[in-house]
Amino acid sequence: MPPPKRSLCYCESCRKLRGDEAHRRRGEPPREYALPFGWCRFNLRVNPCLEAGTLTKKWHMAYHGSNVAAVRRVLDRGELGAGTASILSCRPLKGEPRVGFEEPGENCAPLREEQPPPVLLSPSLQYAGAESLASKVQFRDPKSQRTHQAQVAFQVCVRPGSYTPGPPSAALGEPSDPHFSPAELEWVTKEKGATLLYALLVRVE
Ligand SMILES: [Zn+2]
Image (cartoon, rainbow, N blue to C red; front, side, top):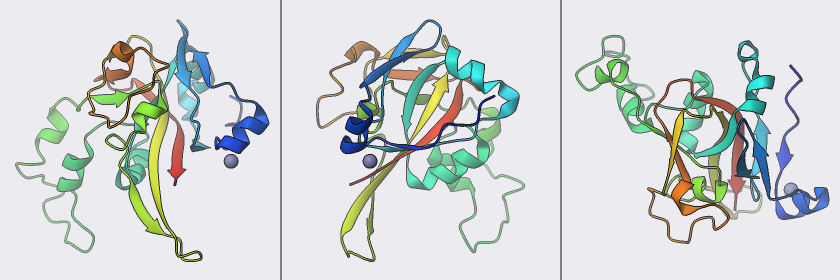
């Protein structure tokens, strides 16, 4: 398996310099996805057991809007899935005793038995990276004292046939990506192992 390609900045000037096309096709059968324009991409090391080289060519590319609080957990687990809220509500907060964690209470019990909640994906980062799907966090640059907003998302490979394309479920303030058919803008998968983490995307405004 070839080493992961280096991380790339997809800001306006960098992508123009490289002459990137806005869309590419990937997978069997091929399916179109947008390049992450406006974001910075950090490629993740793919599990070598999964023959990722083959997978990433045969699987489709998609994006999943995330939030800063969930990134660490997703990276630790190595996969998307399991709603952020339910996981967080079961974890002891920092400084709290870990009582009840080994023996989950009523609220935690369904985590293992219940079906994982569906994972929302999109071939468009304009859609997956919308604020309602990729929540913004504010931070202040200590040097410039300026306030910025940051968003995170994941780029994943998704197994063809494991997801259902459908219309957007998130209410967006602006029109969704006009390049893609609105009827197939949001891909939903409930299958375990349907996605493979490919890259972490960060946008700072
Ligand atoms: Zn750049």
